[in-house]
Length: 157
Length: 83
Image 1 (cartoon, rainbow over the protein chains, first blue to last red):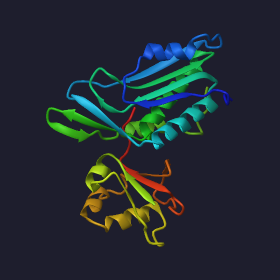
Image 2 (tube, rainbow over the protein chains, first blue to last red):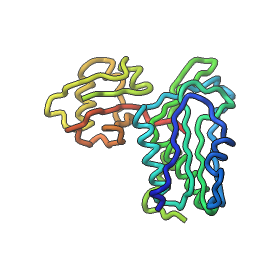
Image 3 (spheres, rainbow over the protein chains, first blue to last red):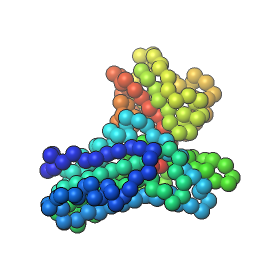
């Protein structure tokens, strides 16, 4: 449906500016009626820092496949996905998904779909630093469940 | 073929990647895990719960019964925790 739209996908160590990314997506456009952004933030508490490892090459490919799926399921007019790697401290952003569409529903649904899929399928791993030492964060079963509910039998509104 | 390891799989094996030439009877991802497990304690430790391990062939997720014939790069890693 959106074969002409090329999503912006970046994997980077540097922090990003959410407002600037939204502005870049929507600047000069009159076909966008809704922009939804999701930011995943590093929580504090026990966590002193997270170090994100990724699989270079596959991470880009996997996010790209999810982006294409989102574009085929919803009438999006803009899409930006940024995932950070390296050491991230509490309060800093880890991931950003920005979806644009003529109407809000497609933008909301596509953003949620992308986040559920990225959490379960994109090859990134969090290594957590706490006062007690460092450990690999364990995957949550609920993340797989969240991704599964978007399976092909489910119809996009 | 090239093998790549990530997160605690990489740590347990002690290397991020290597090139191997498995014998012809090693046909699937599950066969490859079983073959690697016999190469040393570090592999046995990394693959001690094979059902937990995820695999990819040439940057695409695959199941344990996937054929490895023609694969350039096979990767092993724990369940993903990005986002």
